[in-house]
Each structure stands twice: as C-alpha cells, then as structure tokens.
Length: 511
Image (cartoon, rainbow, N blue to C red; front, side, top):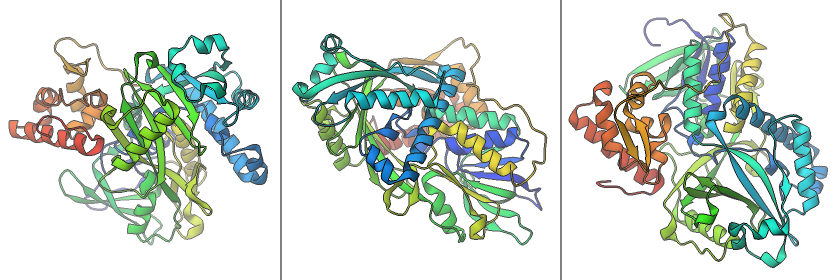
C-alpha cells in the first residue's frame, strides 16, 4: 500500500469486525488477493458488544411475530424462517467444529397463562427449529414438571407465580470469548495471504475511469496517508456502512439502521449460578438473563441509534430502565443502581427498510451495481452467530462476478492455540494468564495498544474488575516487545483505565 502505482488487490474489505474478518478469510481461501482494513482494532466495535450467544433462532418466532403477522406479511415469514434455519445450522457447525470457543448454557423460559407463549406454541417452535437442522446439535427441549420447577430455587423468584403455567428448558451456546473468535479469523485470513490492517481508516472510496476502486487510507498509528486500489470493495463496516458511502459521495442508498443495545452486569444470588432465563417483557420485547463467569448480564434494551465515532456507552436512563425490566421479572430480588458492576452498549447493524423504524432483521449483501457503483458491495445485518455463512456468501458473490488472481486454498476456522507456557503468570479477577502467552500475542497478533491485548486477544478486561488490577503488570510484561518506555507504559495504563471508565462505567485507581 502506498508508493508508486501499487498493484491492485482483487478485493478490499472495509471493517475488521466478525463479518469483515470472515469475508477476508473466505475470499483469501478462494484465491482472491484481499486487503482487510479496520479503523480501530479488530473486533473493537459491535463484535465485542453483542449478546454473546450462538442463538438457536427461537426469537425469530417470538411474541410480536404471531402467526397472523406472518400470514399478513409472507415476505417477513420467509425471511424469518430462513434466518432461523441459518441460525440453527451455523449453531451446529460452530459448536461442532470449534467447541473450545463456546460453552453450553441451560436456559429456562417461563410460560404464563395470560400472556407470552403457551406450551403448544413452544413445542411447535422447537419442532420447527429441529426440522430446520435435522441431526444437528441438540436443543435439549424439555417441559419441566411442577416438581422440577419447585426444586429450582432460582425459579421461585419469578413474578406472578400463581399465573405460571409451566417452564421449559433448552440449551443455548455462549461465545465465552467472541473477540478472540474474530481475531482468530483475521489471523487465519492472514495465513492465507490476506493483508490485514488494523488502525487503518478508509477516508474515501472512489471509482476510477478504468473501473478500479481507489481507497484513501489514514494510518492512525503514524498519521501517514496511503492509497490502495482494488477491483472490488466489500463494505462490512457494520453500523458505519452508510457513513463510509456518504463521505465518499457514492451514489448508493442508505442500507443500515443502527439499533443500540445495552446490557448490565450484576452478581445474582447463588441459586442463579450457571443458569439463564429467557422471557418476554409486557411490551413483547425479549429479555435475557445470562450467566457470565460468576456474574450475570441482562438486557438488551434496544433503541434506534446512529453510530458514533467515539464509540458507545450505556446511558444512565437506559441502565435504570434495565433495572426496572429485571425487577419486573424478579420483583423480590429488587436490584438497585448500586448492584450494577459494569455495563456495555453497542450499535447493531440492521438492514434499513421502509416502515421499519428499528430496521429489519434481514441479513443481506447489497450489490450496488444497479446504483451506479459496479464492484461495490455492502453487507448489512451481520451477526457473530452466522459469520461463517456471511463470509461464504460474500466470497460466492464475488466469485460469480470476477475470477480470483490466485489459486484456491484450504480454509481454516480453527481456534488458534498457544504453546505450552512455563514461568510467570499474571492474575486478574481470579483468573491467571501465562505471561508467555501475552508476550507471544504482543509480538505476533497485531497488538497496538494495551486494550487490544486485554479485551480482544485475551479476556482479562472482562473480569469482574475489568482488568484494572492487572493492567500495569501486563503493560510492563510486554513493554520490551512493544517498544514502550516506562513513560509509555504509564500512558498505556492511563489510557486503558480511562477507556474502561468511559465505555463500561467502572472507575479504577487513577482513572
């Protein structure tokens, strides 16, 4: 990149979240020379702020989407069945192929007589899911007996117990470390020959007279300006896809509607350890209470929201609203603001559609040739749980329109292991991480700042104390590899603490 007349790439992928990473991995495997460009760190945006579930797709049949709604809108019915099918099959594929990156979570769904989902509808919904993925990873659907319900102390906290007609159990899978899944995918793409650049902002995208696309880049580490040319561009920048088109004056329509989702983290009574609750609020919105190590997070509370360059944080009004939501489900626990350990928010990319102020759940690859931008593609509605399907569909669409410049190679979805470590470990929130692993990552996995290592190469930052107790030791332990002087170590630690305070509402020493 940069310099006189660089050879063009086959494809430039904008956005180093999970969709862009998967696209780069599949494109490189298909033989396309590929550049992956991310303005921050890989997985630094929406991919790190999700619900962290490899969801079975049950919500696509949830309240608010009644049979009558589907009959009145066949397009929605077809889309939601396809989304559920994709969710189930990707769930099976990911859990089977990458078991070390997920863990099974027991979910419990209360059924109420006067609202929510009757048992027959629950049976029908789960039967449809099984039919969409025959022979896949089991859902473990099971209606609980009254004796089993009474034997679970956590369920005794549910509201309106006298109106409870039953509880069903099923198994979901949680991405215990979604950022690492994205980083693994980026590194797998790099192994296949893709050029992967974080902290590289695309400031404009222009189509040249010869049909190539020229991208103007800003290296945010050095301030250097560069250019890159490609025969095709895939805009997979999530909630920012429209902003990139607007700054480049591309003649393409708005395709994204951001939806801000917020979750809060608390410590619940011991009887909740390891179990999750899925229910519906009085307005029909889904509400999840999900285990997170020894803690739980709950939400989301969604609202239309456009992306912000400075990132996102949970606002006070939304946090208080989420506490009200929780207390409406478990009134005798009565959480207060003091119980919130930390919070997070992210803006999910949703496909814009007329009549849908919150966007719709359709997952689409938009070919902008019909709008005067041939070779420019935009992906909307991408989800971490279906990222492999997204990458494969993007690579197929490009293959249908142009030939790769190189031979195809075997793709890898493997979780990248670290070598056996010996020696010093660093402790954070009760967990320990070998210093050897931290040092290897700092030297080989495109780490630029301390938070890249703490949140996205390792889950240290997601500990109860958000890694504030370990930040200085980690920074000092990798300082020689990163080339940080003592003053730069101090600056990295201060930067990390300030970021945790801003993004998660947690104040640490000297924050």
